[in-house]
Amino acid sequence: MKVNTTMPEALLPFYREELLLAKKEFAEKHFQQSWRHLERAHILGQPYPIAHTAVHWKMLRFGIKIKNRKEIIGQIPRLLVGGVKSFVGKIPVGNTGGANVPPLQPMEIPEDLQILIEHHSD
Image (cartoon, rainbow, N blue to C red; front, side, top):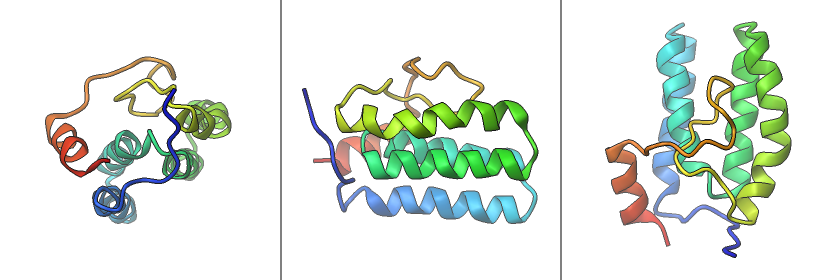
């Protein structure tokens, strides 16, 4: 069993950039683009408990801000369990983290993110 703690320093700037772009797009009321960046940040941060939990917190806040009941309800268990699953290395790789996808369903990682993960992870 692989135990993950913190995101590798080399991967962190890409994760932070996705979060920054999500915030920028949200401020401009580009909600779909904002959500897409949160999903990408989720894929990058998913193996690392703190980053994973932080993205679910941002997804929950997104759901609250746009008054999306399904997203709010869907994020609560993900927020509570996601970090623990990351810590013990039991994550559905590539899952985008939203309430619109099953929480345990592995998904294909976009090619550009796969390259980042391969070149900037431990």
